[in-house]
Length: 343
Ligand code: UD1
Image 1 (tube, helix red, strand yellow):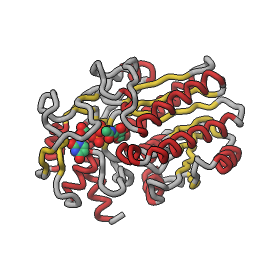
Image 2 (tube, rainbow, N blue to C red; image 1 turned 180 degrees about the horizontal axis):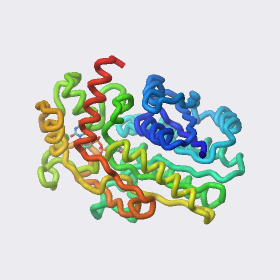
Image 3 (cartoon, helix red, strand yellow; image 1 turned 180 degrees about the vertical axis):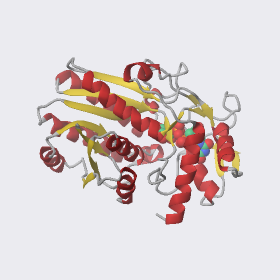
Image 4 (tube, rainbow, N blue to C red; image 1 turned 90 degrees about the vertical axis):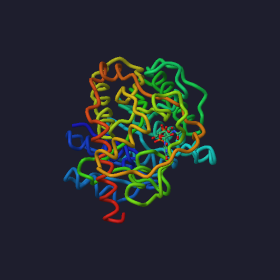
């Protein structure tokens, strides 16, 4: 079975992807610099898979350490590259951190892989943020790429371009960029989930932290959008479904024989849900009232963003399976678990 390197494998999406890979029989090696994650995630992964997954602490910005690591792991034949900073607001305040971390890491990793002179399957974590405010809904991969709204978004656009150019110049690389919509939820085991540091910026961790009493109330950012109930609409996808899209992508790249291969896929459910829909579903699945109020719009938010996922359905043979209710219940079980354990 092939050996896959997962960078940022102790992060939110990375950890769930590692579990799915191991459960499908892949040999996995994780690297992570622990800048926004913790070693207890490795324990959660190991418990969930009932295996001891290989891990090395590595900062990919260091070219020498990166090259040494790849040289010592010559037998990898696939890479899933999650390692990156992801807070939109922070990227506006500290753009150099984002350009340096997200782009040097990608370049160093690619350089090191290039030195192996062997075929490499490479999956890149991109984001629906590359579409900005979409012209046509649901969003297809043909939607135009807008000027990025943040340095974080720009690093995703530039990352895609770097990898496209690399595939055109080097036939060893076969690359897929996955454009994620809004991942939510946690593994059903409640051994791994989202671990935001400080005040959560994303909706679902804010909801679960409010429900458990860590936050006073949720603020709904605007109810005056031109949507069915005035709140924003997003394509919320269970993180385990999203994780499985990476495996389908690796399987697809296995079948590709033509050189210079690069492609992009939207990974979402294909359905939009509003912020109020999410609040209602959360109240139903957890059987409790959530404290919230309506506030002003958040700068940079678009009214509606949801995916057309026909391309991934057809070409990758991948489809999301889990519901919003599954996602919210798993996120809630995870929140309760980490509060009991005081991680
Ligand atoms: C955000 C990022 C996006 C990133 C994604 C990763 C921004 C502008 N975009 O997407 O680049 O790829 O996270 O997960 O930050 N909301 C509230 N109250 C809250 C939090 C959120 O009403 O306390 C609303 C937001 O206005 C939005 C929706 O919930 O309409 C989802 O927000 P969020 O989870 O932050 O995701 P995005 O903004 O879609």
